[in-house]
Image (cartoon, rainbow, N blue to C red; front, side):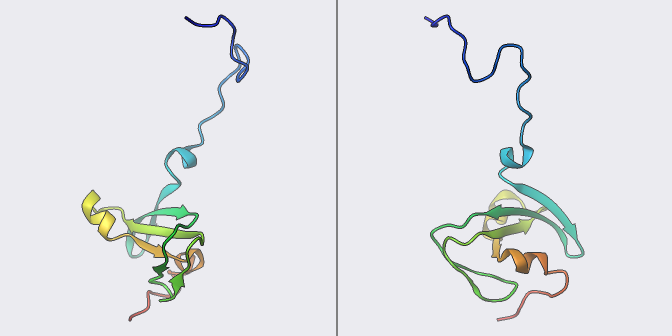
Length: 101
């Protein structure tokens, strides 16, 4: 049975706070460039290290970076084709291409 008292979280009759779309979508945005459309998500960093395709250097564990994959890829393919970039390398990829190993 309800307690009968109102919640103090939002005063009665007040408008709800606007939805933060960036937070609700996990920070994913779609970006268009000369090499196609990409889904881009900025992440805080995790427990693994990755190799950045922009500079061929390691993205250390716990470092904020960008995860990008092609927007036209289907789900299973998108998971396999995700690439972890340094944020600065992703922003500069229009000026310089990916390095070759």
